[in-house]
Length: 600
Image (tube, rainbow, N blue to C red; front, side, top):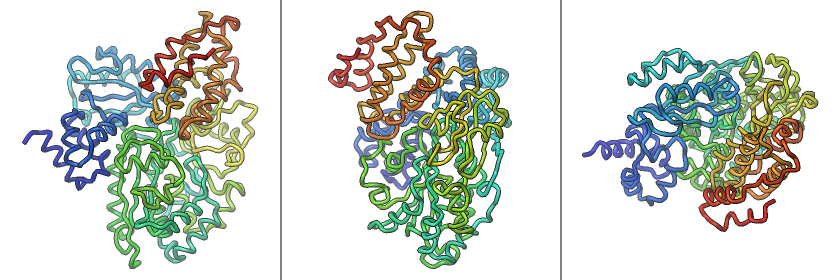
């Protein structure tokens, strides 16, 4: 039996040859074989009774899966704007020079490849990188890069690299009712059981807890809809695909408060009648997997998972972990469910919503890591208690991931209603020019708005809080975000697939126009036209929010753009042939680019 055949059988048996586990099978298989050749994918397709097109489609969709050879050392530098502000580009160039390789290409000896990842979720301790999608290194500097290059050249296994390189700090700066009041495992489940499922649902509704993933849907209502939907089974899913650049709060919660996350999921199962839960763990957090599995096993031993939880006959529930493979769009709940089912992470058309037709077509509640942690506090203290914190429309506390130009980056928990300026003062930010709240898909605020407050009714957020001082070029910030969205588009709909690429290309043109007299008002007009197209015509929220940073920075930091408009009356700023070429390349069709023919 060949090595590949033996590896394939081992991984297939590990996942009971379940085609819905295709992404997990591909991940595990690649760990053994190094990459995924077509012959291996063909054999996998036969064994799972799937088409080769389906298997190859999944393998090519996720950026952590490789259908071409990659190095034994696969290094991904975080490309988030805060890492770039800390010098990641220079460090990456240094490593490539030392190893004599071109970014994105395999070294001639097949030993190493170096590229970029959108964000590693380590913005408070960057610059950071991933190695082999399994190990993370934080706080990079020139000496570390030099040492790393030498160890790669001499083929030192990553497990033997300096241990302190892999240390990850939690950087918890301010706590409140979630982070400052630890619960013993089982406390919240016991409280929920003493109330009963229906009474627990009533408390959730009284709390007015809204989802902490960004959308802010009422958690109690979501659980009620899932409970009441007909189905052969009900599921509880934890969205731990924290892919929004600048956000890392879920990483900290999963590291220190994993029991609370799993306990909150178990309470949701009690309310909805679910017997199975799934955690969708983002691929960049693969290093947390063993620790989380240990916590799950401990909870089973404590009768907090499995059959007859806490001695309650018929209360059966268990949790499994599904690891993503690098796709920001899977943070959208329906795309996440598609990925859980072993498919490409393409957002579904809604309705029907997951609470009615979710995982495997069954009623499914999908909530964020922080939401489940909050549910445990509500189970213990009650809905009225939670509703008394924050504001009437935005109850409870919110955890913020603070990074960028500040003295104390890290995790800050505040009741809803805290002002932007209060967070800036607490984190040690000085001379702040802008704050990006909620990540690239959120809002960019200038100093005149710093008195505004974090709340669903004022400045909503999924948790990211990036600070930019007066030395930063907000045009470059917007350009970085534009490239992020172009890179992360799932490609399903033409407006997003083409539009995000054209926005990034147009901003690149303006970046190269300084001093050359090539930028003009027409370029900004074209960008705003693309913004309108993306905001109104795309399939999901990724495309609709892709131009948020562009729109905000043009409106609030116009001088940053004016520097690139050297000759406002000069009008050749649209290279039609180049734009058509891009449109054809990203769509694969000539007619998809026809709308560009009449562009200015």
